[in-house]
Image (cartoon, rainbow, N blue to C red; front, side, top):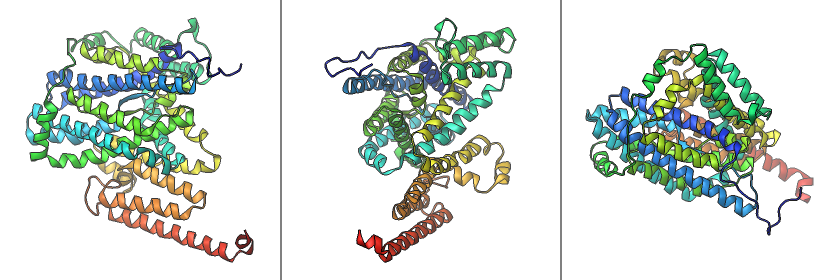
Length: 506
């Protein structure tokens, strides 16, 4: 069939069947984060009035605004390129950043102040500053995207997909093997092989219905789930407040150390957005990385104005949505559902009723699609760079999941696990970028990446627990030595070219 002409604009639907699959994938990702936030903050002895009345509504505002904007942005791209297969960017709370704000901002603020409300206000201010920094970073976002190789950026994201998404969710899938493996089989048949489900139901919806029904039939989900589910029902209006402003005063008068956590994690967040926008471009939808970083920053600041304490980002799940054939409807629905669910305290209810083993296989698929895209969108000669860029996140996963509870065990594996896991996103990108440059025999460019990696290590953005001068001296020296080696090969190639008569005659 011929492509529509400029005089016959295509119809870009508000919602289509494929949006349902993508909605459940994105909804599960966000709901998991919301539930982790609630459980963790309650465990830190933050009152339910702050958790359910301020933090989650603030997060919902950020999620709602960002999802609605990206749905509008997708419609704009569809009109511009006159095609109906544009997928809106997925958007929500960044999981790694969420953990950093929980344990690197909220917990220290609570310990230092001894007051849950003051600690929450400090965290709100830190979140607002993080959003402002990311909005500022957007001014150079396109320049950075242009100079970083695609293999390096997508390899870094694939590392996250392999460990924190596909890997961890496969563990969750197998916690109840009878249910998890059945749901995984449905996902593989419906989303990978693209076979229609009974009654032509969306695959994710069919999988959740069948898996949840089986969980209750075999007794793996009992009636106590319902009693837990409705504990926090109520009405929590989305209202702005001045906590961010009061928190700024507290932050700058006695808790400046918190900003040493905020700066590197915000840089990470900006790069995560950049990587995921790059992944979408590789999948066929080209968005402006600067605009996306600015939207993420503004969305984070708006969330803070309503009491939220967690930065937001363009999600890795976007490529999974693209593979599912989603449009803009899943993004609109996600924003609306989160606003409603948070206002009435339904987040915990939904999470309690549906077993994790039922929804985890959907995220396994999202991780699979991201890893596959990292390879499919690069020339085969860059596969080693993609593979190398994936590896630092293995260390980051081991460090973040086990170091707190079993530090000796992690150190026993290797003394390099924790330093490699610290700043894994930066390490992954620089190692991948150096490998791409070397594959292309651009040794001077490889040396430049090594020099930047040395600088990042020197100030503590990589291989160190916090920002400081000479924070990771051994690693700084190691990258400088790498750069020196690359410069030697650049000099050698230039000398060989100068002595080659065929090269001189050209």
